[in-house]
Length: 230
Ligand code: SAM
Image (cartoon, rainbow, N blue to C red; front, side, top):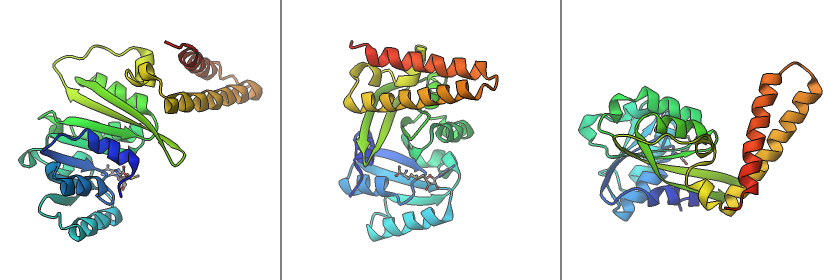
């Protein structure tokens, strides 16, 4: 039973893909895709021994070990050119960690795989990386599951990407235009959080005017986004 979150990620993996799932933990995503016949090959990469052993067990128990290969490795080092990977998924981590994995793995990205990323926080840092590495965001999703709101960002390699505007970077070029219920909920929460931060900054009276200005600017952006019904 795959979570709704990983089910939506799976939706963007093309038929017959050669997948690298980085930070795979139990390898649920590649095993699910292999059982469905949706992928022809997968590497399940894990940097921590415990999760790597979990992945190995789940793969063996599912009898998918001809298709899904567990590897103990840091980030994109889990695969090489010989694996002919065309799709990379990195899910369930913070945006900054995803960015550091992408930055450390430039060599593995030389063949320009499709990227399907599911940051838990700091989505804007992921969009900024994509925008400056000739990856165009082609789809985004937002969903709520067991009290958490998750975003999924799908990106394709292109020759040149148009620069995203500040609000597209923060809210997501697709998400800000569809404004689904989960989106409104997320940014309403975020607005309250930022207002509390601003309040405590003001009360503390430590001279953090630069910080206050940044928070205020974010609050203004969010308010504008939530007020605008286009
Ligand atoms: N991808 C699965 C999901 O979305 O359900 C598991 C998410 S789990 C919260 C994050 C996993 O990423 C952990 O198992 C962790 O060990 C692994 N991880 C963190 N940094 C990593 C890195 N640099 N390379 C490979 N795996 C990493």
